[in-house]
Image 1 (tube, one colour):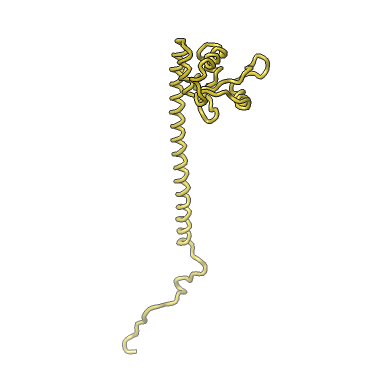
Image 2: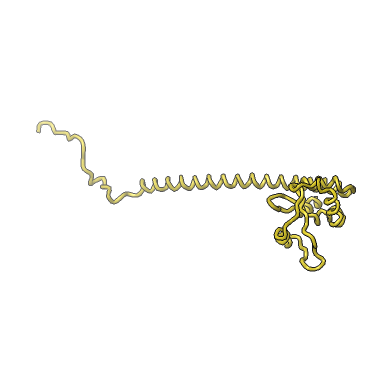
Length: 177
């Protein structure tokens, strides 16, 4: 479970997709980033743009705080590759170590968990919105009921009192008169 959490923390939202960076994948596979990048470049046809893309300088700068990487000497000289779930699955075909195979399985499980959590959050968000709408509707209805009740309980000044009302109807005549 701890391994799943470590992987989950290294899945980023980049360009509206869930992706992992080459430096994180290299760490998980226990290889150097340059070897991972070399394997990818040697098999470039296996990694179309929806499987893997290179970050722009701005994207990398935005992620830099979360990655705790330096921008001084010893930092990355090249912009990192970002791998989508499909790209990570494709990595298993170019990295042949047992560690890479086991780690790919763990990473796929982490992506499935992220998707499940995202769906749960979306469903919860929809339910909260529906409740807000229902509460707003009830507030409007309660306001209308209270307004109507105030009309019944308050006597308007323009209304005449019971004693001052004009009598209507028939008058009975007394017999013999």
